Image 1 (cartoon, rainbow, N blue to C red):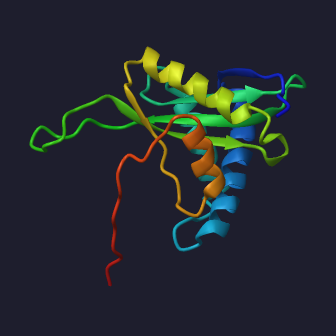
Image 2: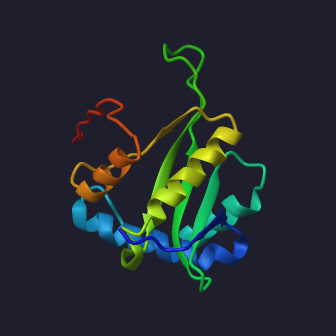
Amino acid sequence: MRKVRLTVRPAVPADVPALVELRLANAEAHRVLDPAVYRIPPRDAVRRHFTAVLADESGPDGILVAEAPDGRVVGMVEVLRHSDPPEHQILNPEPSAQVHTVVLPDVRGLGVGSALLRAAERWAADRGIRYLSAGIHHRNADAVRFYSRQGFTDGGISLGRRLG
């Protein structure tokens, strides 16, 4: 596998347009997997989300980007901290977060996703997070394969049922 030279760094407000495009492209790809589950969010809502997260420097969540030598943002990883379970529940509290990795199609297979995930793991560990999860749709074989190669294992089964 050929690797691409990258800089992985925390996202800054100037990255918001690239983050919006990554999110919307990812939404399009997921909508193909299962249109009953996935939607294309409004562009302005996505822009507001990334703007707010990047404005809250002391917030619980983080966004890192992969930048190619030409300055183009070619991928991102979002680290979203989970809340601790309420005191009345039986789960032990464990600092944890979910990761969402997006890489542009033209640079997939070049180590971008791996570099982003390694940086996300460092970012999370530096903030006391001890467990990362990745919610993957069962039809997204490429994502399942990617996260499995990165050491993610089956964390359990989530069962659900639509009502009505």
